[in-house]
Image (spheres, rainbow, N blue to C red):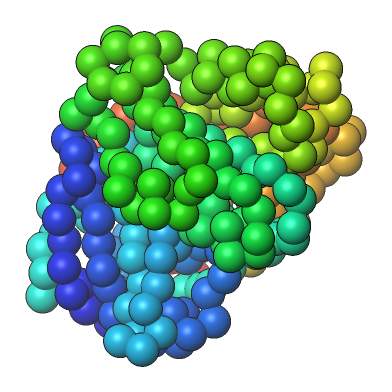
Amino acid sequence: MYRIVSAIFLAENIKKFVIEAPRVAKKRMAGQFVMLRIEENGERFPLTIADSDPENGTITLIVQGAGKSTRALNGMEAGEMISDLVGPLGTPSHIEYFGTAVSIGGGVGTAIAYPTAAALKAAGNYVITINGARTKELVILEDEMKAVSDEAYITTDDGSYGISGFVTQKLQELIDTGRKIDFVLAIGPIPMMKAVAEVTRPYGIKTVVSLNPIMIDGTGMCGGCRVTVGNEIKFACVDGPEFDAHLVDFKNLADRNRIYLKEEKESAESGVHHCRLTEQM
C-alpha cells in the first residue's frame, strides 16, 4: 500500500499527488513512469513521474481525470492509500548537451515535459519552454517551468493568458527568427505532437515525443502498448515512451487509442470495472 501525502488540484480536473514510494523515488529518472492501481482488481494505468524527493521517499504524479480510474484517483485525498504502484518503468529520457533545447508541453503534458526540461537544463542546455493550454484556468506548473528555463512562454488557445494561439505557432516563430534550435521535446495530445513534428521536419531538427498508448502491464508482456515507429513495431512501455517524432505513425497511435472508447464509456457510466486478467486466473 502507498500513502498519499498530499493531494492538491492545480486546475479543473487536474490534481497533483505526492505519494510515499521510497524505492521508486530513489531510482526514478526523467521520462519514466509508474503503473498504478487504486484498489485490488481495479484497472492498471500509467502515470509519468513528474518529480521525486529521494530524501523524503516521495514521488509526484499529476493526474487529469479523463477516464473512470483517473477520476476515481482524483477523488482521493491525503492520508488515503493506493493499492499498487510499480516502477520506475520505461526507458529514461536521453539527456545530453544539445545546445538550444525547446521543451513543449500541451495541457497535462506539461507535467511530463517538466522533469525532462529540468534534466536538459542540468546538462547545460539553453532551455526554452512553451506550455500550451486551452484557457488560462488550465495552465499548470508555470512557476516550475520558468525555474528550469532560460526563456519561458505560455500559449492559450482562446488568448485568455500569455500568447494567443497554439504552441506550434510560437515554435515556428522561434525558428523564423533564424536562431539555431538543436532539439525539441513535445508532450501532449496526439494532434499537438504530430503538428510539432511537422513544423520541425523541414528543418531537420531532432524532435522527440512521449507516446501515450493503451498500457496494461507496463513491462512489455501484454503487447497492448505497441506503436509503429519507422515502420517497426515497438512497445512504448519498454522501448519508450519517448521516440523520434519524425518516425512515429501518429494515425496508427490515434486509431489504437480509440479501440476501447465504447467499453470505457460503459465502465464510467456503470461505475463498475471488471479486471479480465483476474477473472481468467
